[in-house]
Length: 248
Ligand code: ADP
Ligand code: MG
Image (cartoon, rainbow, N blue to C red):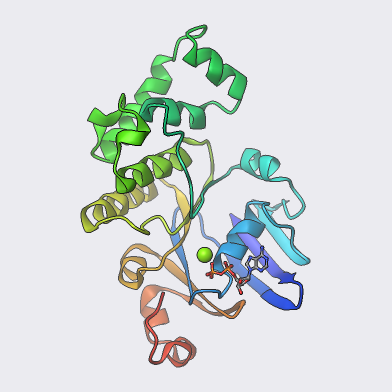
């Protein structure tokens, strides 16, 4: 699946990522955790091509994608939810989700202006995911009428619908209430059952421990531990790094 080898990135004098290596197993959920500023989003930016690595390699099913553009990485099969993913608020939920299903924007706009029919398959896929998120009645509502948490769910749905083999979610639970958190958790577990591979950054430690099969702990740009939730909780390096601090 995804293999990261000795990845490094600096910003001026700051070594944000220091020779990080890790593997993702297919059909599993991996959580990337670490204090603020430890390099989690930078790793996501490197994998998705928003930033270029100084050194190291990123392999997706043994294809070297290290120097690929964000578009080529998306086409290679990586779909990403950004920490600040925004919807098109003047469009409906369904229209926002159609945008994810249709990689060619021109086709999408034709759909909107009625020159093409939205296919039954597309509608079915959108309805299916809205049902999983327990919001089937929202399909025709304008995104601007949804609460922040519901908009977040639609942004996650968009990343899920975008064809992919690896789904990357940067803090999918940030700013959403407990009920929506549980809905997102259920969705991710359901996707895993359907053989999805998910890499997520999570602030909420208890959520990460409950949901993930594998946890990668970053500290000051270095991977300090990799293992199951149980192994991580009892790892002396992790305990030492976080002593007195809340894990995030
Ligand atoms: P996290 O997501 O774990 O909170 P980040 O990956 O956002 O951490 O940041 C890691 C470090 O790199 C931080 O010190 C941050 O200030 C710095 N950093 C991140 N992106 C940039 C950038 N584009 N330019 C300069 N410094 C950056
Ligand atoms: Mg971040």
